[in-house]
Image (cartoon, rainbow, N blue to C red; front, side):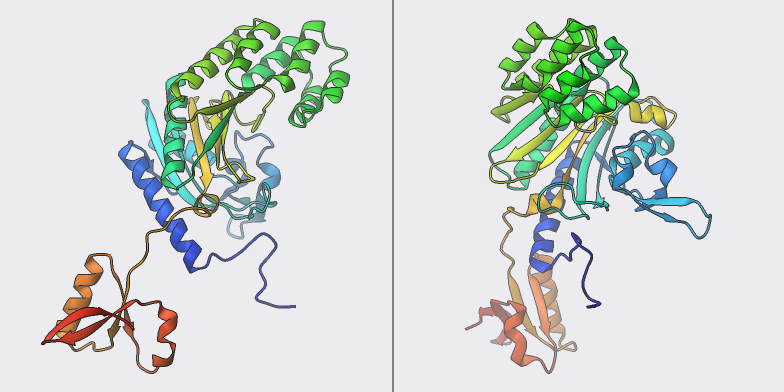
Length: 385
């Protein structure tokens, strides 16, 4: 067995890609900061009962677990940073008003999520706590679309759903938990025959509404059709009003907005609007998120919340990177004038590499285009021939 092999779907990030990722990370976090989002850095490990609080079963199977040798309790390696940020808002910051938080860090998952994906995404995201209205949903989605533009992602389309529609139908019909789980699976698969079979003992109105949900997919006209075919329940009417407002307020940023009332992404975790951003020629969602008002309640404080997350590896895959200027300097640590010249170049963002003795044959590997040379008593750069 080769001891240097890594586990499946786990890989190193080499210099070129690492540089692209870091540049994208800095651009996005700087943009979050000027919009008032404060950076937090939760730990990689937590006790499982805290890490999975409020997420139902959505993250349980994705979480690596191990026993803490200090306490004997079960630990989990985070598979998503959002629940940790919710814990920070609920228990550590303990603010009463609106809180905007952001984060960036590695997460680890037992299985890859989507085509060609790693089990160690580099997650970056932003969350708003303490505001229940559609205005905060609009804010986080506009912030997400800005972040995608900063990463060089073009021709974005936005898929939007609302889990409250499906939930309201099941609550009205007093569906058991077992049947709810089966209907959820069928709805996720858009399996119309299975939905019809599972709903056969429910009242006619609920059966018709559940059968219609997988077909309620398309542009803003879907919301008009949904008002005609779905029951006039208060939760459904409120959801359709929210989706209509979102469509109008995001039109200037993203011309392609698709609505899918059968989309139940994060059903056990989200409580309202859910969304995902896609780009041409990319097989996976570039960003996704939604409203999760119930998570704060699980931590002892019922704080409404909405946010989104992205994988920096996905974002950086097509990102443009500024060309890096590299200068080769001779190795003369005692030459004060040379050291001042090196310091001046580095202060302007130029990469200066000192040519350590004994490696002149390998200078080409350093990627330097210019060299520091002494001319007329002064150190200056010139192009390497």
